[in-house]
Image 1 (spheres, rainbow, N blue to C red):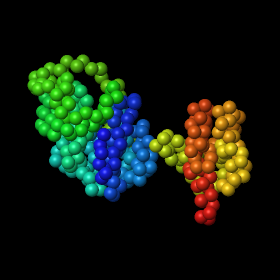
Image 2 (cartoon, rainbow, N blue to C red):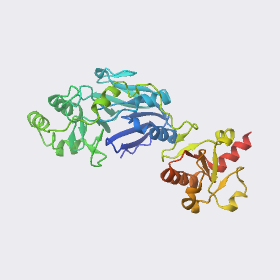
Image 3 (cartoon, rainbow, N blue to C red):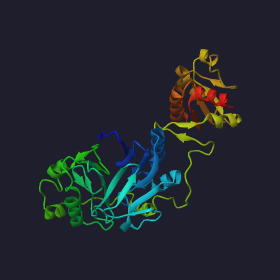
Image 4 (cartoon, rainbow, N blue to C red):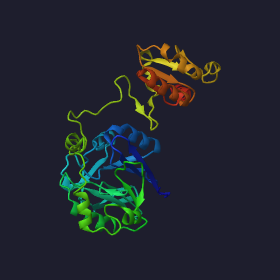
Length: 356
């Protein structure tokens, strides 16, 4: 993994498509880049950026994906960031039409664009300015490469791309792929040169082309939906930005917990049930308790979850929002109700009251 005090780095994963998404942030300015986001994980990605204190300035897709829908449009709608894609892909709603040799900046950090066509004609790889690491998309994978039998793919072209644009990097350059199907996270240029069964070990163009032309792979399951959507940067056909729930302006934490603010609860107290999961003596302590609560201590919560009313959404509260976060998860898994954690718990509630 990367170790650099000037860089913030996270590698995220989508189990359905085995896609890696990458967050890169400048530690000095807190500007960030998001590479290969997945539509279904938009809230996860936004939560991580928010919790790390990062401002998303650019979202990049390594190519027009065939196995999942990109979260690029969602990210721009949420943050106002720019969308970057290969110029040759001719994608709509793209701000940065990228070509070989372009540079993408985020704060004091930079990514250099390398055109690596072959899997598709619009594949890009992104190399940091010190060439310590490279995001290879579906061009070069760990002990594999992308397929070349759709979207203007070319086995000969991919061979040339890998040899000239990727294998020309230093041996210790870390490879971060767009996918991995067996749980491998990283490799290096040296490893792939030596051990990649398709193109490593001195494989010739004839070896590589022969290998790819005889893979006999099934047609990608989601290509007919994914490619048209990704040519629109992932914008839904109706152009409607999806919301978390109609009942309140929820946010989702990186841990996956829906939360609501004290300000909203104070203004909409009549619209929700409030369940307090603290111990009895805490209700009369220095933080006190909200009026008209349902009191269910956390150690009794699983036994009493079926007794909670379901005629209104439920907001769960504790001292700091930690114990109540567990109760939210329990309620979601057992009853599937509309529920949210009170962000910051009673500490945040009392701070709000004090500011009034």
